[in-house]
Length: 106
Image (cartoon, rainbow, N blue to C red):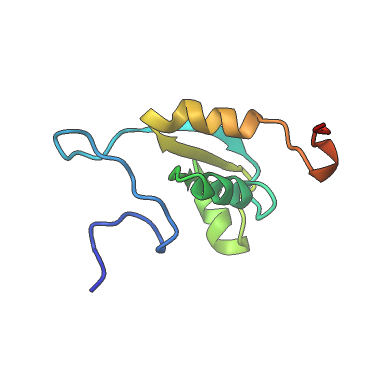
């Protein structure tokens, strides 16, 4: 039987952390981004791969645009748990390396 206490849309979505009292940790703004599969969804997926839960919030009329046309013209605000904000920011600021960037070892 599935655990109904999980927050998220699927099994791959990391659990939102709770404090010692059992209350869910407050969300902190990570960044504002364009609402597209190439930006917001990719950031959410990357953070999930590192075990950091993240959710988009559509401010103002952004939610209406998301419902009508599939994306928000106002962008999305991405939120993460307060305790994971620094780690999430560091992941997004990290330099991307490919196989050609590996140092030669003797």
